[in-house]
Amino acid sequence: MGDIPNERLESARGRGFTAVTNAQSLRSWDVAIIAVPTPLLNGEPDMSFVTLACVALAQTLSPGGCIILESTTYPGTTRGLVARVVSEESGLSESDFLVGFSPERIDPGNTKYSLENTPKVVSGLSSEALSRVDSFYQSLGLQTVRALTCEAAELAKLVENSFRQVNIALVNEVLVAARAMGIDPWEAFRLAATKPFGFMGFLPGPGVGGHCLPIDPIYLSWAARQFGDSQIRLIEAADAANREMPKYTTARAIALLEQGGASERPRKVMLLGVAYKRNTDDYRESPTFQVLKELESEGIQVTLCDPIVAELNRPVEGYSVARWSPDLCKSFHLVVVMVLHDVVPIEELILSSALILDTRNFLDGFEFDGETL
Ligand SMILES: NC(=O)c1ccc[n+]([C@@H]2O[C@H](COP(=O)([O-])OP(=O)(O)OC[C@H]3O[C@@H](n4cnc5c(N)ncnc54)[C@H](O)[C@@H]3O)[C@@H](O)[C@H]2O)c1
Image 1 (tube, rainbow, N blue to C red):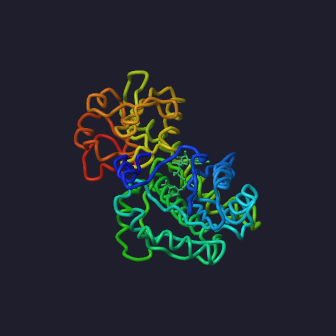
Image 2 (tube, rainbow, N blue to C red):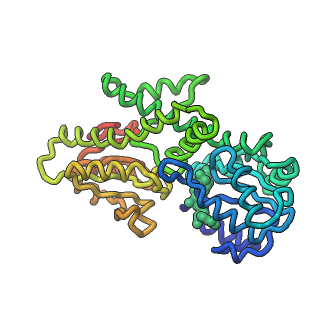
Image 3 (cartoon, helix red, strand yellow):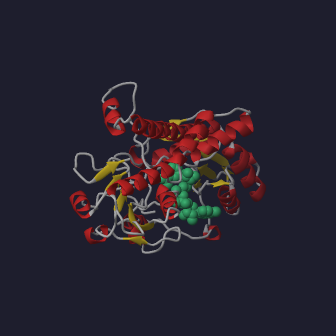
């Protein structure tokens, strides 16, 4: 979704790279990377995409070929699923080919850290596989960090995402508690973040979205129960806390509408920001859809607006998405800022909105009619 610009892909093609749309078109290869989705199905890991990719690669695998799994997954996938399925489907023994795991660590939209300056954790099922995986990424100019086992590398990726999920849940719950105590949570977060050690700043919001935080930590808590007969209660509690935020956002929006005294019915609300993340068009698992449904169930008329997602020129999750303009903003009783992309001019947004609920304190430092979450 827009992470790598088309021009960059075009220039790669000019340098001899080709793209195919089905695995049958693959001829021979030395290294194959699997980076297919690993979603949840009924609350459990859905390994169907990884399995299908393994089946496809097995058709063209030659002895000595190297397969690297980059998809986020539960510990044991590389050994217990990838190596096994590829061996079964290719007819080769597991010792005839190399298998490794190197987690994808890209943070779409992050302008400071990218593939080029984020160390790449590398692992292999054998020392030969580890060397091959390591030298492959080094040949791309990447800094690598060797893991002793694939399982440790798989777990490390889940720890990274769970760390973020748990900390976001903490500030989300603190936000709700601070509001109940009559304290400005954003001011408290600002103050806490001035401590130069022993603290890492995370910010609350209207709910977590994307394909990582709502999903990956569940892979870890699932694996702990499944394979280790233990629980990671913090992850499950954090997931529940984060899933409450769209409801809380809706309640705040309704309270603000009532304070604003709009007498016209139906009340009209714009949800500004459909992407779950600033300056991206990635709307997967976006909390905006949950807030939309909650508001609609209260009889409120909701319009989705996102200048970047609207560029996709198609409905998303069955909803049409409007482009932002000051005139459009004027027709709503309330604008809920879910995500504020840089292309939206803040002053114009404030001048054209009757009332604003700013869910992420984007408008810090500006005066506007409304409140922060
Ligand atoms: N994209 C990221 O920023 C990011 C960051 C960290 C981790 N990850 C992990 O990487 C994995 C992929 O995520 P994504 O966001 O790139 O997913 P995505 O859905 O954007 O892309 C996956 C691609 O895989 C293709 N695909 C699916 N099944 C296939 C098959 N059998 N054979 C060939 N291609 C197939 C799809 O067509 C799609 O182009 C996931 O496990 C995710 O958790 C992604």
